[in-house]
Image 1 (cartoon, helix red, strand yellow):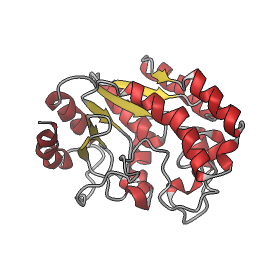
Image 2 (cartoon, rainbow, N blue to C red):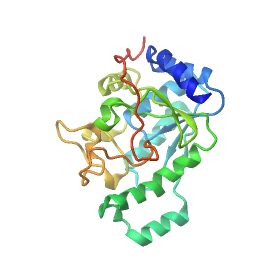
Image 3 (spheres, one colour):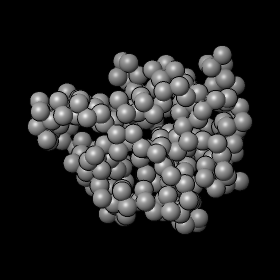
Length: 253
């Protein structure tokens, strides 16, 4: 049933802007819907749409314990702007203590496996608790963030979380989203203006250089051009992909 819902919604969603995509998703998919934000510019755009429309969609985040101070500041500003609390999940104490005991406080620099182990404890496991029992998971993935995300679908069934996964800005450009945040005075992370286009944990993020993918500053010491933390990949470690996307819609139309 859930797979057929994705097939039905895909072409209908493709023709809509963000506001109407979220409206349709909320109307069509029964049960609890969750949007996971990391407070990036696309996440702020989606949060604005959810809160200003008063949609029954939970906005949640993952506090890894290693975020930038600017991210915590934006978190507070966003709650104040929309008068809504953004609930967080945190790493569980025992696995985190065991991780640091085994690899050290910054052991994720030593190998890809060590970094992925850190991501699992700080991000992947908390996400599984946030998505427990949900019908739909909304994300801020965009196709132009990196080559690895270029063919991610607008909507698909996520077998790992047993829920529909909706990527409502997958076919939006960064420029279109930045323009919208400026037009509607949506708060954004001050680090974006300093070259940090994709912002994760502070030790694992640097500003990008001209010509680099947005996500090139994430885990920059690794050579793999398909770097992901594990939140958006399947059991085979590959990002979920879908059919080619139509041209991007207008931001508001």
